[in-house]
Length: 135
Image (cartoon, rainbow, N blue to C red; front, side):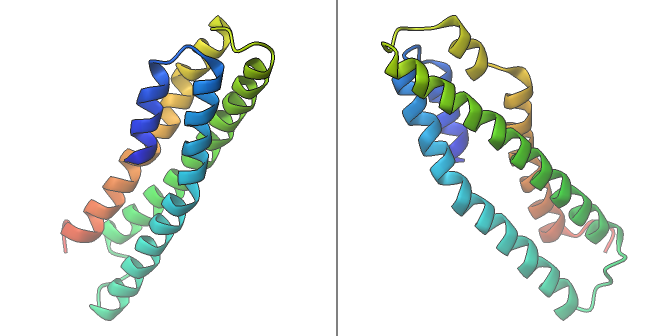
């Protein structure tokens, strides 16, 4: 959630130094987000075992597949965002003037789809593990 808010704030900024700072905070938040998501997934699978559900149940298989897609999308989106942060840092050092290039990078549809899509996928994984459709 915090990464999404920081990204939304960055969409409204023009100065590379502000974008660099906001994307730096997103990068800082990525580690605890990833750790939390991984722990929720691992404990969810442990609960599948403890509650005597089958790892072959549709909702379990769907959660695993969505988690793998989440991890890939988050990783790829994170690398794109980090490249944007590095560009913003370079532009900030060169005078910190508003730039159409950095504005386009912050609003890049693929980066936004990967980042927000990863968040939606993680919510879907959690929803599957909580509501267990078909179980």
